[in-house]
Image (cartoon, rainbow, N blue to C red; front, side):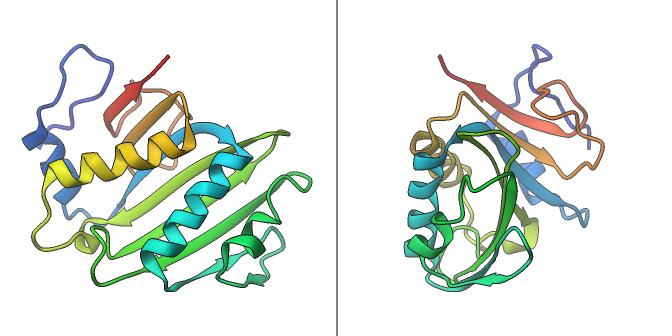
Length: 171
């Protein structure tokens, strides 16, 4: 299958996006948002904890953090750092979801949500996925969102990079 790239002038239709999401090639699908304000990242964390109710977090030093939004959000913005989260729910659209937060700068936090195609519900519908994606994007108030195949050599926030199959911007 050819992976169409966002920003090349050839937009993918919903069916092509769905094929990319369901492609069982062994790599994750990564949803990346341009850096967001810590207060908005805190709102996303609270929503994910409410939606999933099971999971684990690890703080900047690799220590396990209580699966509770106040405990996790208290770590945001304290020096440069990272947080890893893992969520699980048999009823969520994405049954197993990973969260990566990275804040090299003051006031802004990079957000990545990752999942394997096998972690999508059997009755997966692209409309529901895009609705969920837009909900997370609205909460974060990020300028751009990318959905891509996992690619270690991805040039951050480049919509034309190999593997990007969905990209949206807002003013």
